[in-house]
Length: 230
Image 1: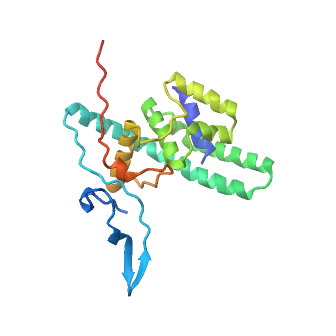
Image 2: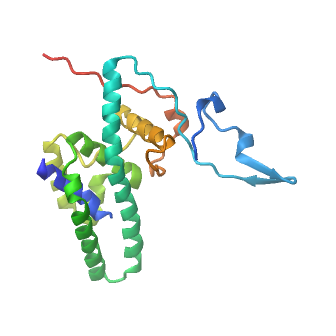
Image 3: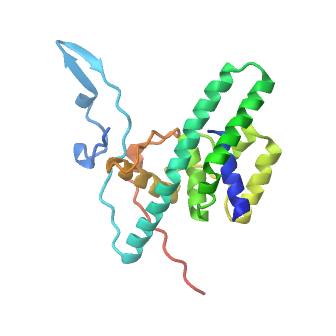
């Protein structure tokens, strides 16, 4: 597993409200009157963030309940690393924009890499394969860029290919993106994040992906069933 976590580390070192519930509107939209405030005849437009309308989770079997809370633990463990990566990426890019010299840009990037490696390597090594897979997906959610492209942009195409090949040994891919609109596991991740945010467990930042929460709210959560033993 040490080889696998090397590529996860690379991703991180390269890149150093309340919610409305379904009773607001049956169709999951925010009433038009709640989008505006009237002051003495003038209309003031208030921009509201799109929200995930959370519904009661239907987990009828013991297996489904156990799986959900097991998976929830994995998501909440991986999320902070993804957000650290996203915040660090913004800082890195902002500072690189201020540096004109290519040599100084490389030196600054290397300094950031060294800092992130010293700060988080030991923690990332403790992640399981499932937590690593979730982290790859969440990197895309928080940055808007899949991990493979992050490596490629900040290192080289060859190293991106190499790290992806290494990941495949563990049935993982740096090219995995985050798509809760079409992927049930990603939908489950998003649902867990939103609920954890409402409960005050995490401070959830908006996704950099284009997500339609009106549609997501209507999608059923499907718990993966255990594979039959042959």
